[in-house]
Image 1 (cartoon, rainbow, N blue to C red):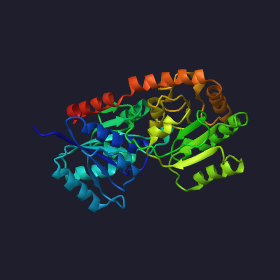
Image 2 (image 1 turned 180 degrees about the vertical axis):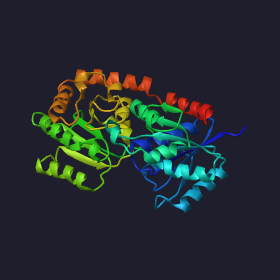
Image 3 (image 1 turned 30 degrees about the horizontal axis):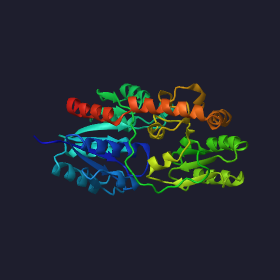
Image 4 (image 1 turned 120 degrees about the horizontal axis):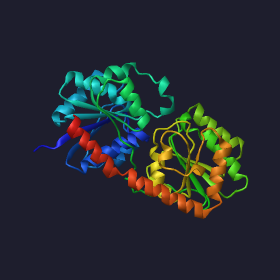
Amino acid sequence: MNKLGIIQIIDSLNVGGAEVLAVNIANGLSEQEIDSHLCATRSEGVLKENIHPDVGCIFLNRKKTIDVKAILKLNKYIKKHHIKIVHAHSSSSFIAVSVKIINPKIKIVWHDHYGNSAFLNSRSVFSLKIFSYLFSVIISVNNDLKKWASKNLKTKNVFFIRNFPVFINQEKTTILRGVEGKKIVHLAGYRKQKDHLNLLEAFQLVSDKHEDWTLHLVGKSYNDEYSDSIDNFIKKNKLSNKVFQYGICLDIQHILSQATIGVLSSKSEGLPISLLEYGLANIPAVVTNVGECSLIIKDSSFIVPPSNSIILANALRLLVNSKEKRKILALEINKTVSTDFSKEAAIFKIIEIYKNEC
């Protein structure tokens, strides 16, 4: 009996929540009785190093929205490997639909990772509604997105599957500066949604009385106005010896093994992979009360309103001042992530959807 052939499609293999999850699913499927493949449509990226050797890969180098050459190349690959299901993540829905038009036998699973779930009322729906006639299944990363899809799109089969964390890369290359046991880590790309400036303001308040604590920003800088505003804040407030920037890093497990506290200061989220990684690494965390972060952190002292640096600073101080609180919170988060957000449970549910709904 032939293995079930599945291909994950994502725009790039740069570090991001959707990208990490696409790689994690492809790798997880390869560990089961699945012929697993992955396609990056526009560009490769550092996550390529994390792809399991058993996962088939194709890179399309797509240059424009309607790129006939890329569409035909993907369709040829799908036919060659007898792939039955195309699992398209985020905006890769367009190329998945394009391939289905010329190869109607394939089934499309669309995975919705939309990060601004707090602003769904303003989300553009026109093209997605058209595409949704051709989707067999929609998978949403949080319950708000599931409700939105059920209300606004035409696909009957809509499921909610939580993100899950996996540490793949075993390198130990990134060394966090500062005093051991006094390091706060923020894992997030430099996008306005992540609100680094709110975090910097909060950290400055904490740092006034805790001068030996340091903040470590790990994530891609896009070298734009927002990135410049972060650099300027650090320079203006003379925090260069307390706030360190590392850019894109793959050795997340090693980084978090050096961290004392994790933090997320976002204005909007679904369910951030970073928070799940904090839990997997068994470190305490302070996060803003956005998306489904409250599923992970249930102690109201450590889940704070967005865009409020004073309350964020107060929550960080609670952990800075108490090793016991850090220990208790870390254990609670780790237990929740290990129990409710395991890779095994998510992969099992995804395979069931493939087999029963496609």
